[in-house]
Image 1 (cartoon, rainbow, N blue to C red):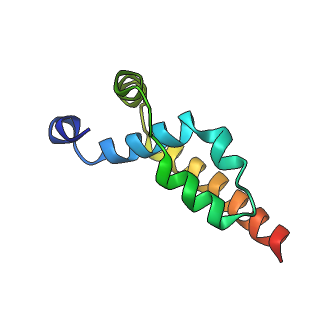
Image 2 (cartoon, rainbow, N blue to C red):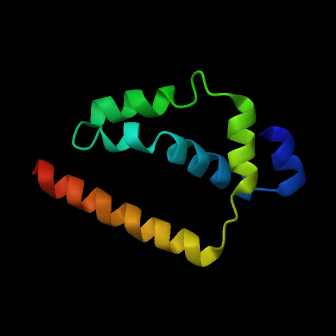
Amino acid sequence: VWDIFFVRGFRTFYRAALALLGLFQDDVVACTGDKARLIRTLRSLGAGLDPDVFVSMLMSMELEAEELRQLEKQHLTLVSLADNATL
């Protein structure tokens, strides 16, 4: 990822994070309401991941500012719902 970062810039880190979360979305969603499990899951993301698959997914992602805003809005809605469910 570092070599891609040096060529493509800071958006590479956003792409890497979204690629990891996309690949392990089911695992992350399964942790809803269990913060300790979510932290363990996030720490283990990428373990055993084929680097070629990851880099291929990372490079295929195009990030536009509007898409990032929509993803952030969806994320905040999900976080709010999860927080309300645990109250």
